[in-house]
Length: 506
Image 1 (cartoon, one colour):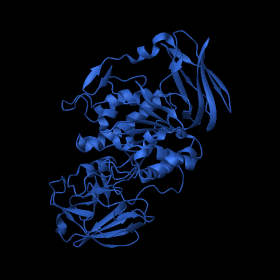
Image 2 (image 1 turned 90 degrees about the vertical axis):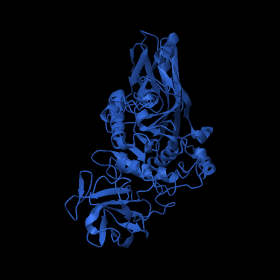
Image 3 (image 1 turned 90 degrees about the horizontal axis):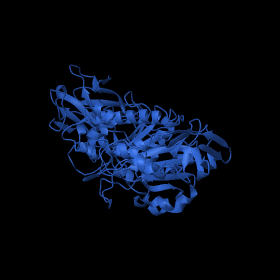
Image 4 (image 1 turned 60 degrees about the vertical axis):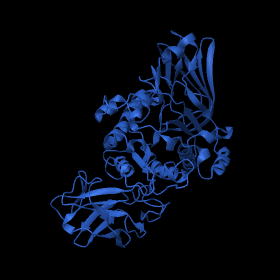
């Protein structure tokens, strides 16, 4: 069954693909592709006539021959580990027929998912012509785009392919995801071996569409009457589930704008649950080759409406970290995040919700990947975050976990004036807390607009559009990494104990 927005159509995918019993690879294997390098083992699969014994041959710098396991017309093989490089030919053979993939490389394969800011094309970014002109210098960064389809059931293979595996010199790069491409290009510059990029994303989609029913059940989101049928799991079924057999290195993700007004209050559950479920599913689908805790990077939401008082964007930014403020954290291990709230684009011809600076976004993701996915030592990838907060009758003293660079601001920090510390939503009485003083690690903000004994909360950059381009008040000492937004309660019954959910700051 495949479901298309507004109408349904019946498609038996496995039957269509197996008609005629022709030997072939599954839809997302092709010439010029990248397969996952050692120490993982790449998985290959496809279709063949019933009862045949398929053999798979790898020829190139090294040679392999493996017999495939065939069940109900679907064959599958797991190669021995292959070091990065190539090119290789991969041939599936059955009696008098064969299918061959040419110019195959081995490297790291990354899945790129999300909504329109991940769809946002290389041709649309700042300096697009320069980016496209550079493409020919990166023939070992290859890319693939899944076609847009939905399904009411989990599919074995993709319904269609929008762009088969391509080399950037072919000219197809203009339509590919900018964040995905730039991430891959920057990683190649660091790793010096092939990178494969799989784009599977759709604009205007909430996290629920990309989540299995298993994941949604964890957050009480399955079967809700207010959830239209095209929301829950239909893109997981059609555009993620088919890839589960593929061995991956990791995934990057840019999504959340749609959830600023759809199930916003449960994103702190649904997003981490989706990550957990993807990890389990890819691990099982690849026969244990994709790591059970594969690295997952994401972009914290950028901006939308300048001057907006709606807290949809800041709320989702916070929930993207499972209400912690940073990743990795105990709930979201082996994750990394690119803060993007300081990269607004007021003049974007694609709308302010689609900033054109994807270079900084991808670079910040790259820093996280180097540290988290590749365990590279000495790579700074986290912006400053408070590790101690002290308050008195006149000020709040915020000490950060690293050296900071600071710009003055009268309103980037806010305090909640309420005798009741929670809830602290739009109805709470938040007032500016101007920055009065700072040093290498500490910022002091004034609390004069609120009686000290009524200060119930402190928050930073809790706005849709908190600052102009790269001009937020708090950055790392290098000025490269912005401090992420946060919101903290003062712990009830104390003067100097603050918390974010169950985590206390003393």
